Amino acid sequence: MSDAAAGVMSAPPPSVPQASWKRFFSPENRYLAPAFITCILLAGHLSFGILESYKKTGIAIVAALLAELILGRIFTGKFPNLASAYISGISVGILVRSPAVWPYLLCAVVSIMSKYVLRVKGRHMWNPSNFGISVLLFLAPETVATLSIQWGNYLLPMIVIWCLGSVIIYRVRRFHITATYVTSFIAFAFMRSWITGSPWQSEIAPLTGPMYQLFIFFMVTDPKTTVRKKFWQCVVVFLVAVVEMILRLNQVVYAPFYALFLVGPTAMLIDICFESRRPTTVVAPV
Image (cartoon, rainbow, N blue to C red; front, side, top):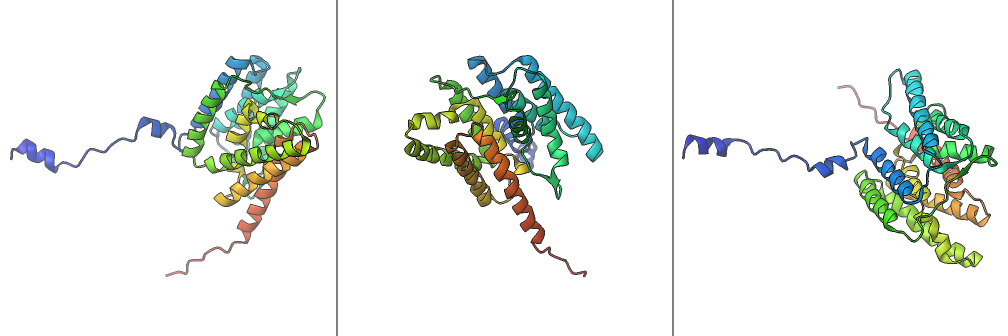
């Protein structure tokens, strides 16, 4: 055997780099969610013009980023990663509808403030954009509304978003939450159709809208505002669907936002309470 051949055989096998697509869809990629929500914005706006205006959306994004930088510096002493703030800002820009500019600015700032102010044992209670939007809908219903456009009969944008979103949510280990909510929503849609006599298609139709894409892929799966255990995550999101159904039967227009606003923090407080009562293991000194 030649020295070259011996060197080749004795050398350690080269490490196989992780596929680039796996690295992109890994939970460690903090820019995956911002990229995905940008795809939702582009698909929705280029297909149906879902944005109120570029200016208002830009104001919401910039306000969220600045609020995150300032509050993060004040409360933690360092500048935080802005991925979460970008998601909150773009969510506000997509979902809020108002003839005025101030709701976009205020909603974005209130959303980010909720992360730093409304905390229990270091955990914030509400998904930021859900909190900001719900507060404005409740306090200024005559000025603020939300996006309610469906994709209509043109299913290509919805299919692309659903496929991409499912891959991303699966890779970050949150698919069970989205799947539980969607399954529950569809089951309750048939129940609402049976109770009210309305066509089942109209009850399921909201799932095809960009509002629900943000809701099921970002709001209900937010790692910072969901309980720890996988089973209870499914239970909580099922209860969100239950409360949403009750609100819809009572003609509450913004049922999904209010349902998550009510159920999410309640579940978080219960989760924190049980965690605080869990005995800690004390290691005896050697």
